[in-house]
Length: 198
Image (cartoon, rainbow, N blue to C red; front, top):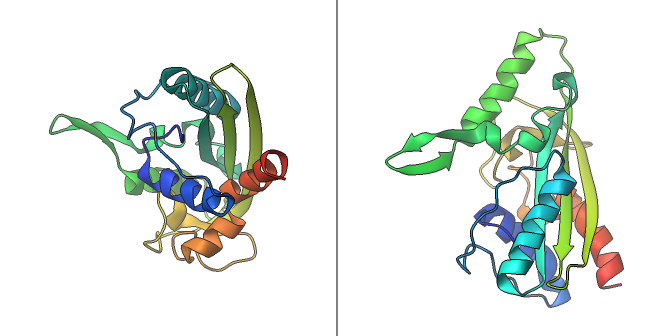
């Protein structure tokens, strides 16, 4: 089971697991509550989500905690990547405005002046938790640079402003299969697969 309520993450994780014969259920489809992400690191948050889902469902649970770190912003937004996209309650429902979040990052970089470094990296931590309390963690990274304005429609989150190292297209402009091959999530999954399926 995938411990997420994020449709974009579920789609990517399911695609990465499909070649290994694993079919995915999400925590959202099982009606499980989302635990508060109170960890101070990606590892802590991934373990928190995986353990909560495993305990609530009685199933092995895989959780992802990921985010963007920008060198010139001292690694921010980092573990608070999703929080930067939180908007005020609208019509009784919370939501995330990723364009607002991308604009916040860009505004902070512009405030540093034209010479501000645009180097950044996406980080992903995958945590597996079993109902018996055992767990395992796998970490992945995708280095790149930030661009502005956002480009592409095939990604989610900060993908439209992230240009992976050695490429000209943003994650949101790449074919999903190509993104899956080079992403931070793919890096973490390669390590997971080597240990769990190798």
